[in-house]
Image (cartoon, rainbow over all chains, first blue to last red; front, side, top):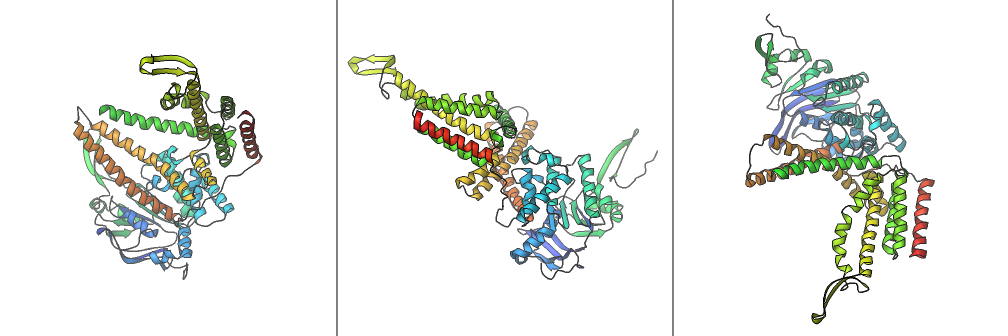
Length: 276
Length: 277
């Protein structure tokens, strides 16, 4: 990639809008993501989180506005250039929400070597990277399995391995904790910690508030009208319950304390007091 | 219609079980499993050609004995292997070769006379050469099918596909077939869930018309879903470096065992063709 500046933000979005066949998916997003940052994109279903991630990964291009990655504008022309394509793809990895979309190869092994092989690493390097990824995620025993014989949690781990195999600087996750059991979820959070310790930039799209406090440096909230309504520190946003409720991120929760039933907005990460 | 539902759900279940079983057998530690799939496919094709070139029944028997021996040393469950070939095949092939047993098609020594009306010039009987020819064909088909079943059971599906490249099948077909096979399971799972979710909400009788409507919408939904999913898959491939050109890592390696097996098969076939015929 030419003109790259090491001080420039990893991503720089300027008034980005996106339309799917005339249907609005994102409206006027401006944002900078710096190196090593952990950003969580919060939003209800259909708010445009996945679209935003796909734009960061250079899979969709803005209908209006522009996106710069590592200081250079990325658009269709940018990816036409082979060198740009491979350089960008090596730097940015995307873990899709549905592992069945990510696991398209016949076996786990073929899946894990796919990225290093297509990104042009040498054969010995492909093997080394794939083996390391399998080992780090503790899935060496699944190597020869076809994807349809994997459990949901195993599929998610293989999906992580497919990206880990090319070890990108930037990791994009779409709903990573959806349908994970508690143990898999805690494993995943440990994995995120490791990425952060290594200085990777991490962007996560989710509506799972339980991971926000621990995992985010900053939080971006998308409204159901596909606009950016908040960008700030996690606690400031988590404590603003009326705001979260307005954007469909918390809900009324009715439950019993001894014999008394009461109702309040439901959020696990902040305390609430009960009358005795 | 109720039966139709049950049958579909049960059918999907048993198909998955069979696939899992085949997968397990193909990954067992056995002789054929240890061979390079390319060598295996070529050797089995040579055997297949021989089966269909030779005339004598003895040749077929010799090759079948060899196949059974290979099945045993490859820990292929014998009962399953025999059932797979002999349960339905004689019946279906039997229908095709049925006319062969009569004197009208194969004249010769009569074994059993069925109709004899000399005044009308009608004579229908089963002949000995007719019966032998019919049996010869059934056996020939059974031996051929056994070879194919042996290849399928001892090789993971995708290795089998990849090995087709030695037979000049273009790589793009191999990749597309591989992905098709992969996503059949995702679609099967979806269909199964849709059937079950409908079943869980059904009470009482539903008219045929309603059911047909539902089936049509199921087909539509599946089509739309697979379309959306195929777009997502393409994006996920792009995201990991795919630029409309598939790169593969050739992981197959030939060694002396492969050459030994190949030459063994070749020598067996040449000898059978030349000397037993």
